[in-house]
Amino acid sequence: MRPQRLDLNLLAVFDAIFAEGNLTRAAARMCMSQPAMSNALNRLRRVAKDDLFVRDGRGIHPTPVAVELAPIVRQALNLLETGLETTPGLRAGRLQSFSIAGMDYYEVVILPKLIATIEERAPGTSIKATTGLSSEMEKPLRFGDIDLLIDYVPLAGPEFRCEVLFEETRVVLMNADPSAPNATISLEEFAASGHVGRAAREGDARIDEIGALMATSGRRLDVRVTINNWLALPAVLSGSRLIGVAPRRIAELYAGQFGLVMAPLPLDVRPIPIYMVWHESREKHHAHRWLRAQLKRVCRNL
Image (cartoon, rainbow, N blue to C red; front, side):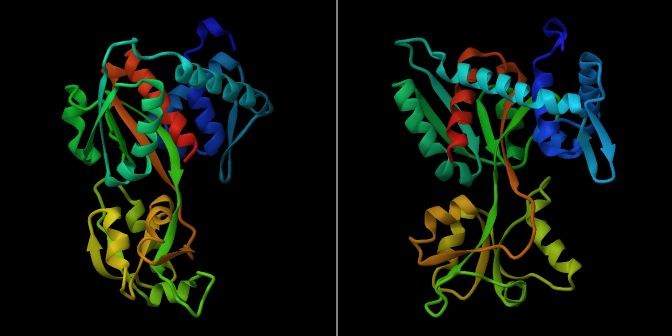
């Protein structure tokens, strides 16, 4: 590739396609539309003078040139991220304030570690945490009332930028059974149990994914209670015979506190990408870039 012709954003596109092996999943990871992802791949092919990825029956696979480039591209992205993390992003002596919005999940899983990192690297910086869904944050992001959004449902539209911070897996959360020291649950037991379910959100098919998988095997999910946020789940389950599916990191935080145990989910479900989303007007803002770098650093160690 000739550096003078290379848009650095294409490195991230290449990395996403190589990691996912599927253009649709790579587009979702980059918060891009399918046509935009295809266009970016065509630009990459012109620069590299190689097909890079070719279709097969299950998706796409890399060419020998792409396989050779992949570790080099990943190393380059790592160097860029490390440089942003270690470069002072805030002027000494200048107080900086950031407003971060997101679902309840981020306030307990991500925010405490982000605050610890910021206190170490930029003392005096303040964070205003706001709980809200992506569907409510378009205007606040557009007008600068919110600097950054953390959610598992990204915002559509060319004015918004997003990046996957990490992927969350799900487990079954239930009351401990003294007669069964190893927490496991079969698909039959899972189907026969009463469930506490989380209400589905617009634009998110993952909450309904478990019910759909159950239906394909002729089973039905018996939802007895529906809640609106993950943090309520452990308390609702405590002392009941109901079970629930929870993000693994939420379960790890609260299972012991409420006398619950975690068991592997007896279904093959996709992990949930956790995105950070910002408005294009903040893309090159130095302090904002520094904040995004700190957030990525924190999430790599969750």
